[in-house]
Image (cartoon, rainbow, N blue to C red; front, side, top):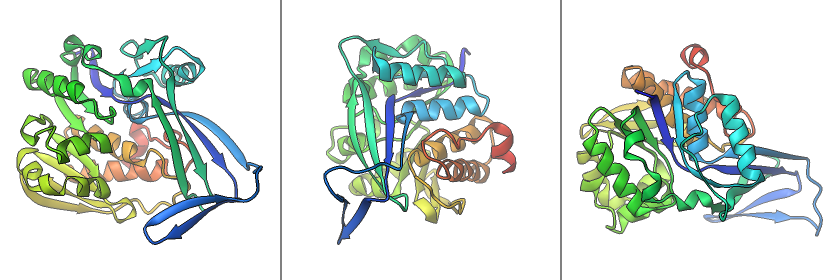
Length: 308
């Protein structure tokens, strides 16, 4: 096999803007930031690569796996930021599609004094990954595919599931975004067409597919539902088998926590570890990531995920 794992998902630039003058107001279930004055002095401004595709690819590479990334960017300065970081981390970027006429997507994250945040996102080129960008050859040249948010591209999902079904030697894990979950909830993506071994999803996202939960539990061999600082639980072959705790680390900023958990969990699977170890590695990786700004600084290597 050419790769141990290929990540499929978004490549974005994350721009963090932090100021104590950004205040989070809570009114019932609604949260909003307020800003004092027409000009706000920033305490810090940081720029990182982001998006589920790059976050998980770097996570796998840092854990010692030969990793490729299928994603789409423009040919611009933001793309250079992303590619340079991936190269430094040892991720194979040869499968990334770059389009001159497209703009690389980005997220501006407003961060308040206690780490609360709101995100303004332009998905740009990352939302344009179409079926032609998914190579049957490369999906047959990896032990594992980890699929993240691809902006609800239904035909692209269909092609990925079809190829995985044909390639019995390749395993798929899926951490869908809200747009993919809406396809399931609306019946546009039937549960029977979802070909994955592992579904990783947070509690709020799980509620988006409330009507399909029983069918998902029946059809997907392993479902991991995370609950933030409460930990989470696992369904295996239709039965709830395990609860797990979060790391307990204090959160500085939570961007990338879900990707870090997924990376740690799948790493355990790639190394044939028991489910208990997989969730421990996922929680440990996520706990490290939330201790820093950005989705990648805290990602653990193989030694530290085993011993931290």
